[in-house]
Amino acid sequence: MTTLLQPGRLSPMRQVPGSIPRPEYVGRKSPKTGEPDIKDAETIERMRAAGHLAAQALAEVGKHVAPGVTTDELDRVGHEFLCDHGAYPSTLGYRGYPKSLCTSLNEVICHGIPDDTVIADGDIVNVDITGYLNGVHGDTNATFLAGDVDEESRLLVERTHEAMMRGIRAVAPGRPLNAIGRVIESYARRFGYGVVRDFTGHGIGTTFHSGLIVPHFDDPDVSLIMEQGMTFTIEPMLTLGTIAYDVWPDHWTAVTRDGRRTAQFEHTILVTGDGYEILTLP
Image: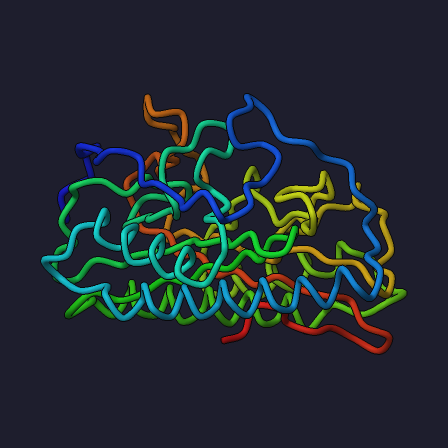
């Protein structure tokens, strides 16, 4: 039985050069929402650039995931990469979030805050990073293996990635948005995994979370039909046990109630004329 995580100590908030434009929500309690679901060609082109940069940042942080490294060090790497490329780390100051990416280890479903926690051999580490560049956001995440990871956890990570890819392949204009969650849940249930319901994919563009919700389970109440030009994230969270969770006193870190492991992957997606485009590729 692995030891359950405990909150660590946070380093001071990292600074962003004044020359880098901030999202509108920085310094405010709540962000704007409600942009159009369908984006114009110019916005999509900017989102390609932001998504590409976010993917490069994720890959750079992923290289540093190893036993003995702190999650705060991962935050430093991601923060500096984005700032060095003229982008603002979207999570920094979003609804008061204090860091430039999320690090969710083992039983943390999502929104883990980087601190002085040291990654141990055998941990699985999700890194969720978003870059704000030229007025738009690119959002992506992946779960990395640290050292010698047990087979059950390794398979969970591999299959969570496959679940995301199956959800992405369900994207096409004229299809119901619910097709995404249906195929993800169908695949995950093959292995007895839980599919987290309360944390979803979301619309994205000039806003970090536009208000559009993308469930990762079969939700018959979702009647929206996908249309060319829509942009949103697909980011399933699968668990080895329950999908019930608790949130730490930091109001962000969500952990499985049974302490069992969970994995997640995410891409930002564009609905094209005949299918989809992944905007968050390196």
